[in-house]
Image 1 (spheres, rainbow, N blue to C red):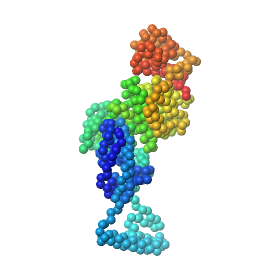
Image 2: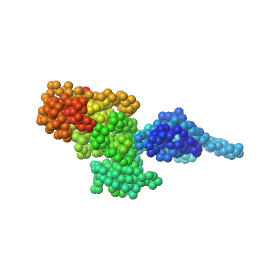
Image 3: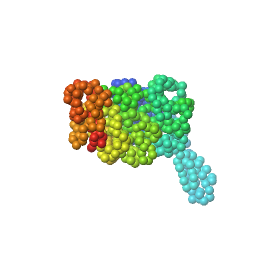
Image 4: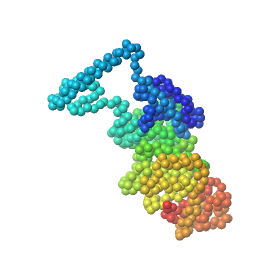
Length: 570
């Protein structure tokens, strides 16, 4: 959406400012909500964010007689628009009575109060030398009268804070700075239920209509349905349910994901609507993503998107990961299967149930320290030392880039997890997907640097992808994967040995048997000859469907790299 162009002030008091505004001139979709950022003038580093589904807000808790700066931006399903220009509004000064007679009253009251306080201070000082020797007794009582906002002890004082102020700065044992959102690990709560109810809204089961089962999770079924809250429009939602007969640990682990997800608010992070904990089945309710998981979606639509569309998907994932990284959250299981995609091709990071990685996961392998981690997506230091950081998430993001550009191909194909660990440790990396822009493959290699400090940060990745999107011509230079791999075959045995006995057998194995006759007629009668096939050769042979071209070239590339331990060296 375009920026909000005009903002009008409403009621202003000494502690609050009410504002209203018009919808952006070009919403470019349905406005889902507005984000209002405000701060005291010249105090930009300490700001507050308010969300509103309406075009009005009231900011309260402000200082009297102070100037505040407001900026507003709108969000659609495609993301946030730019912030509006800065609008400045001033709170009312502390009100003073108008009439001369009335104006004398506060002066008299203040004079008397000051006199009493000064008297109490003098008495306090006179008694301070002997207080702790002779008991605080009546002197403490006198102090309490003079300073009701102070809690006194012998030789010690502590100013009472406003409860809201305390909550802002020191929250459940975690220091929270104004204007800086920080992830809080739910496991630090003594009572996990407290974390759930703090970060996730409780929903009445009667507000939810379950329509159909769309999958199975670790803890139970995943369904699609509708959510109708009072005074709000009906929403399509996804519903995770906790299977009957669960243990208390399973319930805690299940709701732990909601405690994590409920802390996030970003257009590229799956949005939590709420939880059902007061009736059965226990449920986690999130926004519904029509196209499901990214890896499955890409496999179904092989070759159907432009490079810019694919880069747009990658940009969304990187933006979500930048947000998580800024909050101090490490995902640990970033993979295309854990990215959800909606009908507008907006990608959102999901799957925050870390316990899932520690249970029976076909993508995981045992490590020497007992847990399970998804080897093909995990950085070497995380595999070897369980050192998970945002830098290890960047490594995983590089693998996700490879998955997207290869339309859901399985990283490292059919290599065993142990072979992957060994090859990566020796410096080998996945080869470029077919028709991949050189700039994107270079970014993948940057993400796969062995030294985690040499990998780019997520904000750098977002900036780089933005530049590529703004300058599409930079994506036209492709990596010629076929020629790059073929020079590694010189000292190795023919591709077909021990794999396929004939060209026909190979094509049948990859479900491209329809092209057997064409290959044979054009002289590609052995696997040795097939190994030299290029994309141009396929087009000349009449293999015109992009999906078929990709499947054949990827299969050849896989066989070639397996001859060099499955990887292409950096």
